[in-house]
Length: 163
Image (cartoon, rainbow, N blue to C red; front, side, top):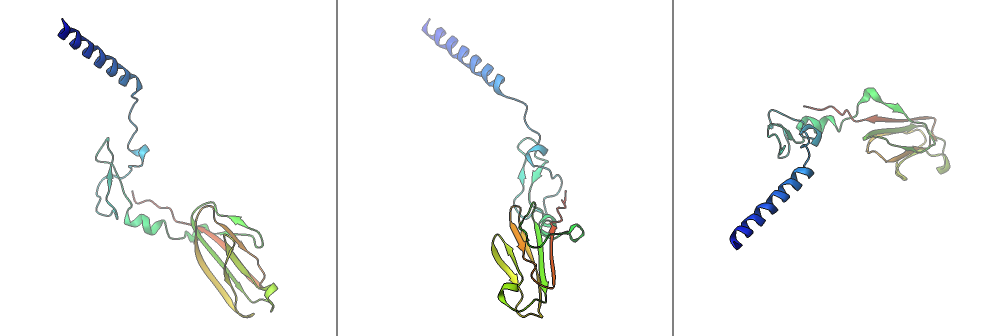
């Protein structure tokens, strides 16, 4: 009698636990929605590919082409930024800043800034200087425009995908 009570209690507990699990378990997400978007060869991955737990033909990795394409400026999408005001960068990319010719005197010297830090200027009054700087979303950039010729342009990264 005791043994059958123990067996019946165990079966009832298992049935209740199974039903509770069935009520709380939903449909599994798709591999694509979890970021496992690549299929096919993994030979051009720079890291170990991670396979989707629900479908091993889908994987996620950083591809060699993505490293290049996502770190190169898209020169066709340059946007000229206004001088003398601070801009907040809205996506990763590159900042081109430069100046040529300025009046003598420290107060009239052109400077360009990233996050409040001066990163470029001119040395002599007839000099020209420019540079490309990698910037990320949220960086604050400014060019004071105190030269005869100034340029200040943001270029987003290419953002191509090698799927």
